[in-house]
Length: 71
Image (cartoon, rainbow, N blue to C red; front, side, top):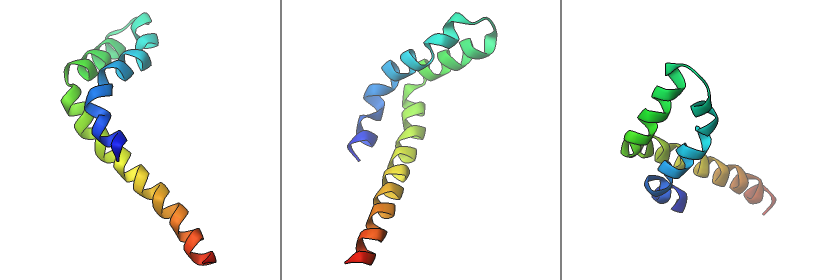
């Protein structure tokens, strides 16, 4: 859950690192993708936070079920 709270803070640096190879390529697609992600960090964070929370809950449940079976 802490990762979901930190998404707005780390979105910009992560996007810069992940999209750096795309910056070296030609074409408008990679350039527009990178610019959109960097300019709309709040929107990107609003999309990423629920995804991170859902994955966290899925991992929690997948670990909880086998543990409760053996108990």
